[in-house]
Amino acid sequence: MIEINENTLNHIQSDKRDFGPELEELKQTEIRDLDFHLKYYRSLVNYISSIPENKIIKQE
Image (cartoon, rainbow, N blue to C red):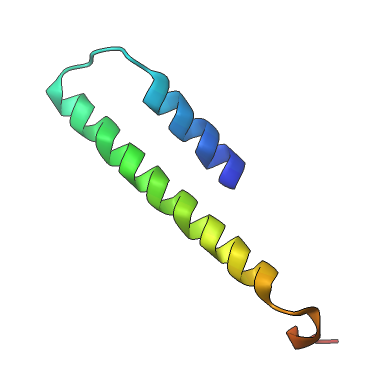
């Protein structure tokens, strides 16, 4: 998920075509949303990775 969002974000940011002010606003909104999700996913992965293995409850 992180890689997909990073690729999408990079693609949107590198697109230099001019679609007018309304679509530019939509582009900036999409950039902000993707940036937020990337930060969220990275934080979640870091949090999960920081949990010691002996603290993870195994359900069988």
